[in-house]
Length: 148
Image (cartoon, rainbow, N blue to C red):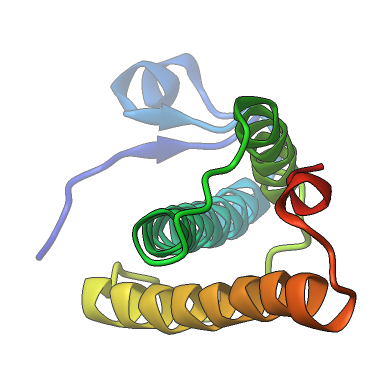
Protein backbone atom coordinates (compact mmCIF):
# COMPACT_ATOMS: atom_id res chain seq x y z
CA UNK A 1 0.00 0.00 0.00
CA UNK A 2 1.22 3.46 -0.78
CA UNK A 3 0.08 6.79 0.56
CA UNK A 4 0.66 10.06 -1.19
CA UNK A 5 1.31 12.49 1.62
CA UNK A 6 3.31 15.67 1.33
CA UNK A 7 5.31 16.75 4.38
CA UNK A 8 6.81 20.19 4.85
CA UNK A 9 9.29 20.94 7.63
CA UNK A 10 9.99 24.15 9.51
CA UNK A 11 11.65 26.84 7.42
CA UNK A 12 10.25 25.66 4.08
CA UNK A 13 8.88 27.99 1.43
CA UNK A 14 5.26 29.11 1.43
CA UNK A 15 4.65 27.16 -1.77
CA UNK A 16 5.88 23.92 -0.17
CA UNK A 17 3.85 24.63 2.95
CA UNK A 18 0.62 25.20 1.01
CA UNK A 19 1.15 22.06 -1.09
CA UNK A 20 1.92 19.83 1.91
CA UNK A 21 -0.65 17.69 3.70
CA UNK A 22 1.36 17.81 6.94
CA UNK A 23 3.40 20.80 8.11
CA UNK A 24 5.92 20.12 10.87
CA UNK A 25 6.70 23.18 12.97
CA UNK A 26 9.87 21.72 14.48
CA UNK A 27 13.01 21.41 12.34
CA UNK A 28 13.78 17.96 10.92
CA UNK A 29 11.71 14.79 10.78
CA UNK A 30 12.13 13.91 14.47
CA UNK A 31 8.55 15.02 15.07
CA UNK A 32 7.29 12.09 12.99
CA UNK A 33 9.32 9.64 15.08
CA UNK A 34 7.97 11.21 18.29
CA UNK A 35 4.42 10.92 16.91
CA UNK A 36 4.92 7.24 16.10
CA UNK A 37 6.31 6.55 19.59
CA UNK A 38 3.41 8.40 21.20
CA UNK A 39 0.84 6.52 19.12
CA UNK A 40 2.41 3.19 20.05
CA UNK A 41 2.33 4.11 23.75
CA UNK A 42 -1.34 5.09 23.39
CA UNK A 43 -2.06 1.73 21.73
CA UNK A 44 -0.40 -0.14 24.61
CA UNK A 45 -2.48 1.82 27.12
CA UNK A 46 -5.65 1.03 25.16
CA UNK A 47 -4.68 -2.64 25.13
CA UNK A 48 -4.03 -2.56 28.89
CA UNK A 49 -7.39 -0.88 29.45
CA UNK A 50 -9.24 -3.46 27.33
CA UNK A 51 -7.44 -6.31 29.11
CA UNK A 52 -8.31 -4.88 32.53
CA UNK A 53 -11.95 -4.12 31.71
CA UNK A 54 -12.63 -7.55 30.19
CA UNK A 55 -10.84 -9.33 33.05
CA UNK A 56 -12.57 -7.31 35.77
CA UNK A 57 -15.99 -7.72 34.19
CA UNK A 58 -15.63 -11.49 33.82
CA UNK A 59 -14.24 -11.80 37.35
CA UNK A 60 -17.07 -9.84 38.95
CA UNK A 61 -19.79 -11.53 36.93
CA UNK A 62 -18.57 -15.06 37.62
CA UNK A 63 -17.82 -14.47 41.31
CA UNK A 64 -21.05 -12.62 42.09
CA UNK A 65 -23.17 -15.10 40.12
CA UNK A 66 -21.65 -18.15 41.78
CA UNK A 67 -21.79 -16.70 45.30
CA UNK A 68 -25.40 -15.71 44.80
CA UNK A 69 -26.56 -18.96 43.18
CA UNK A 70 -24.48 -21.56 45.04
CA UNK A 71 -23.73 -19.97 48.41
CA UNK A 72 -26.87 -17.81 48.63
CA UNK A 73 -24.63 -14.93 49.72
CA UNK A 74 -25.39 -11.51 48.30
CA UNK A 75 -23.13 -8.53 48.67
CA UNK A 76 -24.66 -5.51 50.38
CA UNK A 77 -25.33 -2.60 47.98
CA UNK A 78 -22.80 -0.33 49.68
CA UNK A 79 -20.07 -2.89 49.09
CA UNK A 80 -20.96 -3.13 45.39
CA UNK A 81 -20.73 0.68 45.14
CA UNK A 82 -17.38 0.61 46.96
CA UNK A 83 -16.04 -2.04 44.55
CA UNK A 84 -17.21 0.03 41.57
CA UNK A 85 -15.41 3.14 42.87
CA UNK A 86 -12.17 1.24 43.47
CA UNK A 87 -12.52 -0.35 40.04
CA UNK A 88 -12.81 3.10 38.44
CA UNK A 89 -9.76 4.33 40.36
CA UNK A 90 -7.74 1.45 38.98
CA UNK A 91 -8.92 2.33 35.48
CA UNK A 92 -7.67 5.91 35.88
CA UNK A 93 -4.20 4.66 36.78
CA UNK A 94 -3.96 2.80 33.46
CA UNK A 95 -4.05 6.12 31.57
CA UNK A 96 -0.71 7.19 33.04
CA UNK A 97 1.12 3.89 33.35
CA UNK A 98 4.58 3.34 31.94
CA UNK A 99 3.65 1.77 28.62
CA UNK A 100 6.29 -0.30 26.88
CA UNK A 101 6.69 0.97 23.34
CA UNK A 102 7.04 -1.77 20.75
CA UNK A 103 9.60 -1.52 17.98
CA UNK A 104 7.19 -2.81 15.34
CA UNK A 105 3.66 -1.63 14.50
CA UNK A 106 1.01 -3.10 16.77
CA UNK A 107 -2.30 -4.66 15.89
CA UNK A 108 -5.24 -5.97 17.84
CA UNK A 109 -5.02 -9.67 18.60
CA UNK A 110 -8.51 -10.30 19.91
CA UNK A 111 -8.05 -14.03 20.45
CA UNK A 112 -4.98 -13.43 22.59
CA UNK A 113 -6.67 -10.57 24.46
CA UNK A 114 -9.75 -12.64 25.27
CA UNK A 115 -7.73 -15.72 26.26
CA UNK A 116 -5.50 -13.76 28.63
CA UNK A 117 -8.54 -11.97 30.07
CA UNK A 118 -10.37 -15.25 30.65
CA UNK A 119 -7.38 -16.90 32.35
CA UNK A 120 -6.79 -13.87 34.57
CA UNK A 121 -10.50 -13.63 35.43
CA UNK A 122 -10.61 -17.29 36.46
CA UNK A 123 -7.50 -16.84 38.63
CA UNK A 124 -9.03 -13.75 40.26
CA UNK A 125 -12.29 -15.62 40.83
CA UNK A 126 -10.40 -18.48 42.50
CA UNK A 127 -8.57 -15.92 44.65
CA UNK A 128 -11.85 -14.26 45.63
CA UNK A 129 -13.33 -17.61 46.65
CA UNK A 130 -10.18 -18.41 48.61
CA UNK A 131 -10.53 -15.13 50.51
CA UNK A 132 -14.20 -15.83 51.17
CA UNK A 133 -13.62 -19.36 52.46
CA UNK A 134 -10.62 -18.34 54.56
CA UNK A 135 -12.72 -15.62 56.19
CA UNK A 136 -15.64 -17.99 56.75
CA UNK A 137 -13.90 -21.27 57.64
CA UNK A 138 -10.50 -20.33 59.06
CA UNK A 139 -11.37 -17.12 60.89
CA UNK A 140 -14.94 -18.32 61.59
CA UNK A 141 -16.54 -15.04 60.57
CA UNK A 142 -20.29 -15.03 60.16
CA UNK A 143 -22.09 -13.56 57.16
CA UNK A 144 -22.64 -10.19 58.83
CA UNK A 145 -18.93 -9.80 59.51
CA UNK A 146 -17.99 -10.91 56.00
CA UNK A 147 -20.47 -8.39 54.57
CA UNK A 148 -18.61 -5.59 56.27
